Amino acid sequence: VYEQQFDYVWQSLRRLGVGAGDVEDAVHDVFIVVQRRLRDYDPARPVRPWLFGIAYRIVSERRRRGSAAEVAADDHEVLAVADGQPSPEARFAAEQARRRVHRALAELPIEQRAVLVMHDLEGHSASEVAEAIGAPLNTVYSRLRLARAKFVTAVRASGEAP
Amino acid sequence: VTERTPEALPPDVAGLVELERQTAVATEGARVRVAARLGLEGAASAPGAPVGAGGWGSFVAPLTILTIAAAGAAVWLSVRSAGEGARAPERPQPAVKLPVIAPVAPPPPAPAPAVVQEPQAVAARVAGPDGEVSLLAAARKELAAGNPRGALALLRRHERRWPRGELVQEREVMAIQALAASGAAGEVRARADRFLQRFPGSTLSEAVRQARADSAGDAPGP
Image 1 (cartoon, rainbow over the protein chains, first blue to last red):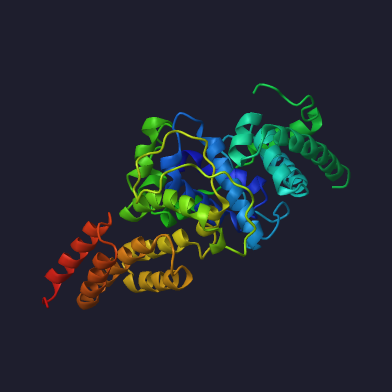
Image 2: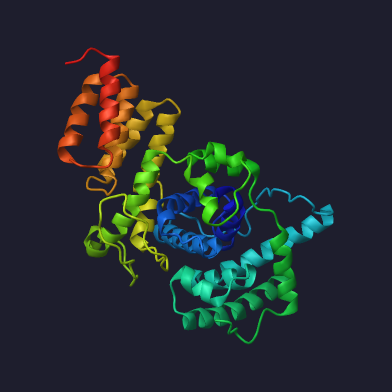
């Protein structure tokens, strides 16, 4: 689980606004909870929504404590380079995109951000989102609508004023 | 369930999101460091197991007695948190549905598949540098690295921070093991006896007796 889902958890935490300097600690916290709650996990269900739910709660908790400095998108992160990236230009474009996307995400309240990340960036179904974050389906839809509107506006604004 | 909100992301934004997906995330170094902190040293380089019923074996195998016991305690914790909101008065408690699980001493039988609802209180106790489990995990790492004094320091911190914590038994067992590792046979005996008296019938008793016996073998008996 750790080996297979490490990147997923890492990326989810980054998208939820955990800064590059804090993400290692946050990943650690997530997997600690995973270890403790393995018994509650039903292997017949997809693992990622379950992990995302844990990550979301960890992020919420860290924010409440003020231990995670908010965002993140502009930090000067030395990114690992994915295998198979065709060219430096493509990597640069992807990195630019990452910054714009994360900066726009940072403008959303955490509840909306979690829904948008899970549904639109990670491709989970709305019912999976609802279960993972413990909110009713209707709430998920309404948060998603609000989140998309803000997100699109923010992303476009960042393109106009680079 | 298949219902979708009418509008999706517009193409220009969706394109950016697609690019964002291609950004690599964690470095291998980070992966290994976190694995080490979790006590999964072997797992970090092992090939991943398939996700599913059989896939948990590779994850569970390296866990120590602490973690296994903690898994049981987590259920316990969530149950007790239900009735003891007053223990965390500084944190506003949103309405959270708790899993309905009988408060059996750890480790409980595997609960029936259910929607996983993690109480915020559990995350609060785990997350952060002073969380119960974080402290114990750090102590265990020190112990595994051959630094029982470092482990004991962390365990004392746990004792101060969580005097009535949910993982007191796990802390005591580790403290006994750390004392044994540092050659303090007398303290091992005293603390082991206190444990056995305080928690008769604990699932961790055997580990305590073992540590006591091993320690007595290393040094002259009483």
